Image (cartoon, rainbow over all chains, first blue to last red; front, top):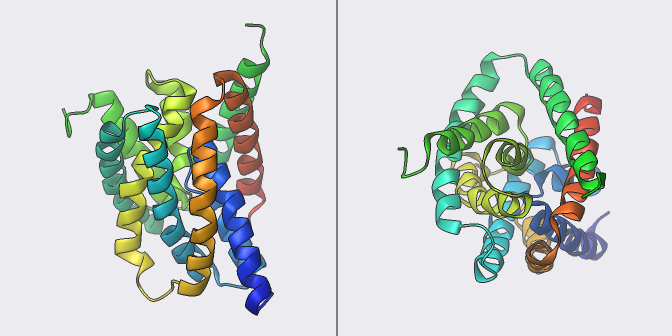
Length: 126
Length: 121
C-alpha cells in the first residue's frame, strides 16, 4: 500500500489498536509491529521505533480516561512503571548476552498457562 | 520500600520491565499477568495500572532508541490520530466491563500472543 490508501488504512488500524489497547491494558505494539512490517513494508527496526512512538500517547490518553473514571491508581502506576523502565534497560542488555528464542518459548508457555487459567475462571460457575 | 511501593509490587515492576526488555515485547503482555497472579489487584485495576506503567516505560524506550532516526513520522502520526480516538473508547469500555468477560477477552488475547510468539521465526 502507498499514499492516501496507506494513510487511511493506518488511521483505521490505529482506531482498532487503540481500542484494544485501552481495554486490554497493553500498549498495542504486539498488534502494530506486524501490521507496519506487512502492510506498510517497514523494516523490523523502523516498525518497532514507530510503534513505540504511538504507544506513548495511546497509553497517556487511556490512563487519563481511567483516572477520570476512578479505575486503578495512576500515581502508583507511574512509580511502578519507572521501576519497569529501569528493568527494561537491564533486560535489553541481558538480551544481547542470552539466547532469545529459548526465553521466548519459556515465556510463551507461561502466558499460555495464564490464558488457560483466565478463560477457565471466566467460564466457571460463579 | 522502593519509590514508596510494597517490595513485592516493586519486584513485579522490575521483573515486568526486565522480561519485556529481554523478550522484545510490550510491557502490558508481561505486566497484566504478573499483576493478576501476584498482586492484590483485580483484573480491571491490573489493566489500568499496566496502562499507566506503560507511560514511563515507553517514554524511556522512545528516549533511548525510538528517536535514533528509525521512526517514520508520517505513519506514526496517522496511527496516533486513530489510536488516540480508539484508546478513549477502549478505556471507557474497561471502566464498565465486568471482571468475567474481561478475563475471558484477555485470556483469549494472551492465547493468541503465545501462539504467535512460538510461530515467529
